[in-house]
Image (cartoon, rainbow, N blue to C red; front, side, top):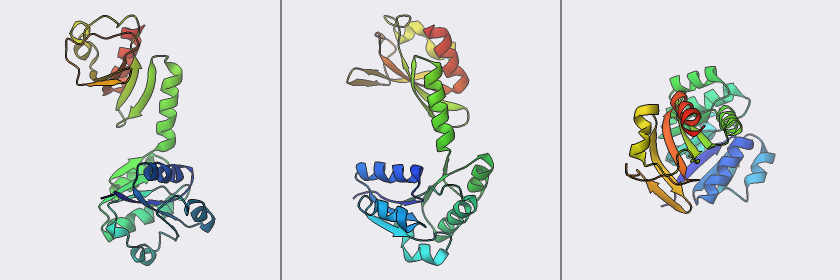
Length: 219
């Protein structure tokens, strides 16, 4: 069975989610209040519909309750985003992910029952800033306000040492959950695994600990 999603709001963020979901072979209903935007996605999404999602009867008529996951990616109109989320919750949608404009918006969305709140601009800014600041950090994915996963390239300072030699968890409070080595991925590497030059270490921990590890262990 293909996974089924609804994406409401076809701006840059919502549009990119539609494209990615279709690439991943999911069924996607794309909805926007603008017929022009809907036309853009008519050939991409499984179904593309022009509708005002702050109108409960319009949402019900689309059978949205039957979809397992709805993404609310409405752009600047915070009121429409909140009202849409509220109606989806009342209709009984199982899982709702909503794009937040700011922390206040995010707080309201959580209070009314959004399952996941995302800050795409802030998160992308954080990823880019981390990549700019460090030559070793290749990618940075925020898990919460304090915890992240980072991909860090092993340099000469780490190469040739085993994980047990480095004792990274005790010294820095981060865990190496996997090592990317060329086309190979070692998940939950053994303590005796020897790090090689240019291995990509996938580490998880608090933002403070990740930066402490990156500064002290790799410089």
